[in-house]
Amino acid sequence: MIEAFGRTDVGRRRKVNEDSFLVAPASHLYAVCDGMGGHNAGEVASRIAIETLGDFVERSGVEKEITWPWGLESDLSIDANRLKTAVRLANSQVFQTAESREELAGMGTTVVAALVSDNVLTLCSAGDSRCYLARDGELRQLTQDDSWVSAALGEGILNSDDVERHPLRNVITKAVGARDSIDLDVFDHPMQPGDLALLCSDGLHGMVSDEEISSLILSDPDSLEEASQRLVDAANDAGGRDNVTVVLLRYTEGS
Image (cartoon, rainbow, N blue to C red; front, side, top):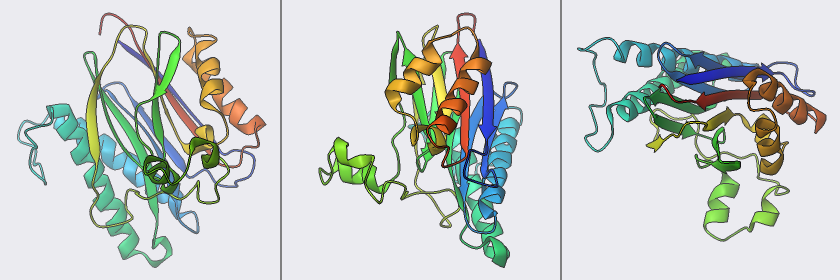
């Protein structure tokens, strides 16, 4: 069984909330998108991505003869294929919309999406929106940021102490809709009863440390609604420089 709750907030500095999120228990899909682009185009990009994700995952769960535009990858599970195709379709839809409307040129969005089946969490992400997993009192990041500082850290150009203050820390290297095609990593992760997954935009993890995130979501595990509010409040109390969006998922026995 999955219990879920999502929350988004404009933050303290922005006038428009360009984040979007999805909590769809019927199709077992959960997602966070953080849009970017001038003239509020980021809001359009994130909304298109969320709608496209939800539509394909819902249809692919019930239509046996559904078309797979890029075929099926035999080394991936059926849910991983579903989720990867959904994000690729979202990429195409955002890119085509941006190409067709001058005021939306250059828009894009990050995405982190989770599809849950039985005790398996299938994840796909692009950009710096993240999925964390809290298990047995410990929090770890499951997704990898597509960002300049993450790549530099992996190559040894930066060390972990430099990341938070580096001037390029907000530069992402991959986004849905930025190009006509997108390379994606998708993977399955087994869940255990009591696991708590957090999907979030960088409006949270850019303002609140992983240690504080862990403390906030584990301090009252019985209420996802209250935990999500604590996360949003912490980001805003730290300055609220960006929109902040969180989706919490708890896996319990009986799934």
